[in-house]
Length: 224
Image (cartoon, rainbow, N blue to C red):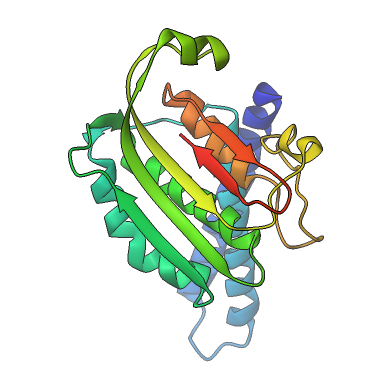
């Protein structure tokens, strides 16, 4: 599935390069008052959205070119809080709970931001009537016992990023499929089904692990 997604993304990007390139040429040639500009601008917007989908496919298939750096997850979360609050709306409380002596991690900063945003958006969508989202960081020492219960985790020292919500939760059938590309419980047109698949791909390509804890009516917690 990963090879299929990667192949589609690369071929589709080649087509988009031609489409977006021609749009840019036409927009430079046409005066601002030209009625045709609006249609071309709409084509370009649609092309940019399509390019976003191909990036998600590449993330799922673990074919992205990552640029890892040593980073502080607390700084990543803190810098995103204002944007996340606008994203989730006024009827949902966002509570960052950050450990002060947090260890550093080696990861691509932009991909970490993608993980945080996708998990928070997923939490928001599970709370149509409002609720609370907690974004938590902490140090985690995983022992042999934990590793045996959570294959293929390796024992050692880690940094944990967790996103919890007070939403509708998930049953076992949904939990078994949430990281599948294009699987979604949302109404038609409300989601692509690639958000959590993208998170999964980024985490795995970054040599991390992700676990989900959820029950129907009891909310959900994603731990990276």
